[in-house]
Image 1 (cartoon, rainbow, N blue to C red):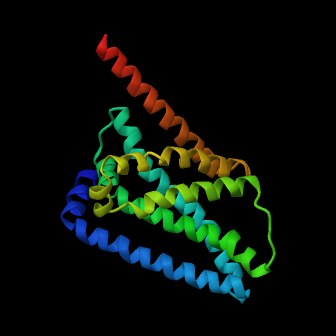
Image 2 (cartoon, rainbow, N blue to C red):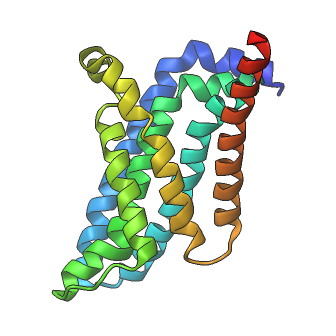
Amino acid sequence: MSMDKIFSYIIPRKEKVILGFKVFYGLILVTVFAASRSLYFGDNNALFFYNLGVNSGRAALVFYVMTLVPGIAERFGIRHKLLALLRIFRRYLGITMYLLALNHSLSVKFIITLASKQIIPLRLFEVLGFGALSILFFLFITSNDLSLGRLGIWWYRIHRLTYLSMGLIFLHVALQRFSIWSVIMGITVALQISSFAYKYFVKIQSSI
């Protein structure tokens, strides 16, 4: 099926796609509660939920990159139906990303720490990851039309914080070990910086 046909199929069913996202949110939240209980009490499913938490972090990274790609492409002047779809559903991709990242952080660190009843010092990459999650919380709670209308220009300023969280996420994965995930984030950061430089260069050239 061509991209044009996919685009034409999805757009009239936009509300159903959004409903699908919302159902997925519910499934993630159910998983968060189930994982928290299992990991806290250390039952037979604890290892399963721990591994699921690790993979939730990886999935969150993929969703995060998907939210950044449309902006990068736009600054480079690239147009494509797939990019248009990502832009249309970017808010829902971002919410999904945050919920997956929340499950990741709770499952691999905080619930286990709480269950141990001991203060386990955060390592540097964990501090950076928690910093990114904290910043993204403000994007998460303002990813709705009400916040957009109420906050005005501040909504855009808040959502520009994603560039700070992007750097923290890159360091979070890069400081753990060299992996495909650190490569993906490294490329994304490089493309993001390059796109801003390219846009600035084009602006300068057009003003000459």
